[in-house]
Image 1 (tube, rainbow, N blue to C red):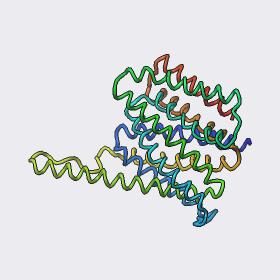
Image 2: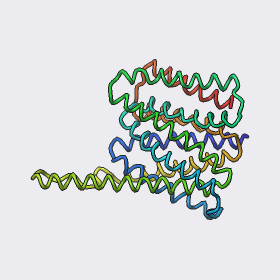
Image 3: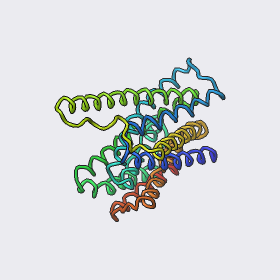
Image 4: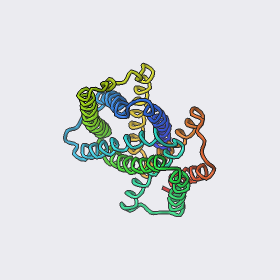
Length: 300
């Protein structure tokens, strides 16, 4: 089980760092550009897995799981990056960590026993999230929206993790490649719609005699931002691979909750790099939520 634990913790480290970079980039770069650019890198890197194992078109469970996982991830990433961009990273990230409840619930539904430690962990995670979210809900509509987006991200990532675990039992490579192809396909559709809206806006401005809209890809997307998008994709690809392999070596519920420790990384980076200040009540809630996740890992 040690190998699975190390891989799950590696996934949490990579995810936490990628979330911080993605959220930071989304504050100055169109969200869809960050998402599509990083996921294209993910797809390119995961395709290298074909050198180790061929894509199995007959692996029905892996393909179905990859599609479900990819669709859920596309929605979750969009919600999370937007939430991190408009809200407090140190609060939105822990809310998204409640994704762990989905695979744990799946395990319980499949007959996994619920021990005292697991039950306590679930209660602490929920209570901590409520405490961390409370001050933000009173801070205004924008803050409340960021928390709602964090909740959507939690549900999406939870479904994605559960599906990855199910599909990887049949084929890791087939599941991950189907996952990546689904995410990229959906983001290409979203990107096309975004470009269409911008073109219509530019045409409308021209017809009304006003100045045209800015270029489709704003000049503020610098080489540094492009490099950061690539790094984000590399981190996500590594996290997906580590998580998928970990589920083949350990229990899905345990692996999922250990990987859900990624908000610790995001919170630390936000405090150190951005100097984010978190209210005492929120900090207590974050700590409770993360302790809860730890107890779930120990009890799962």
